[in-house]
Amino acid sequence: MKKLVEVMGTVDKQGQLFLDNPLSVQEYTRVKVIVLVSEKEEDELTESATDSFVQGWDDAMRGKTFPISQLWEGIDAE
Image (cartoon, rainbow, N blue to C red; front, side):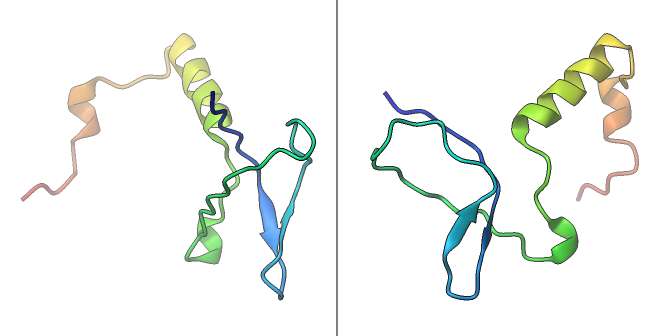
């Protein structure tokens, strides 16, 4: 069975990856690392998928929603 774990980290001048938090996996487990790099500094990845889902769920429960028809208003489709 495979498990997806999302963590943030920093790459140093030598290209070494340093994670912000330790992984909660069994010691000496082989892992596959997929790195998502922001092309622009202002696009820095700070919000996890879980945080995004929790915020969306909270908005929905509080009625902070829009009709689907309004979501396309102002979008230029050719």
